[in-house]
Image (cartoon, rainbow, N blue to C red; front, top):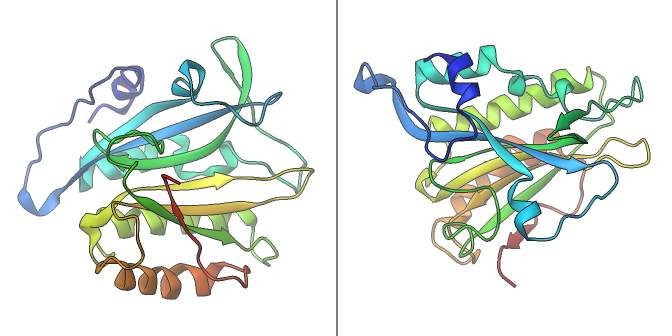
Length: 226
């Protein structure tokens, strides 16, 4: 896969996936998105402006193209995007003449847009895990490790009932100079009574919540339609 060519094509509607060389290397088709947020306006309404607030930046469908994406594009190092309390800096980017920050990096199955209103997401929900920030190790080493683990657990189908997972996001909700991050796991079902839900919640609790969260309230489940 030519990652430079891919980056230049990222605004097109259809991803161009390479032919998989061997069955054992094959993955589902995934797309990486950047989400832009204006520095002046935190909340964007669902309209035409919202629809251009995120963009495809990469895609992959096998182990080789995944590692090419991960090693050659900045999405593997969240320091390129998220608020850094140590230096009190916020990376910003010129997006069509407007200064914006990248508040979220997400990965979704091909054909699924990273928004509630997408036809696949609207019937589902999401788990949210707020990440601890009072840690001894470098904040971005810690965040990068969690983000890579989450992505790899999804694409390798280490998650139980992995066919229920539509996408994942890591979100920077920092404000007033205080770091605040969370991960989200978007699923097809909208009720925790769904038969697939207990195994997924148990996996998230053991592999992510207990290891990385300081939120005492457990893992909330949020519906995409109220």
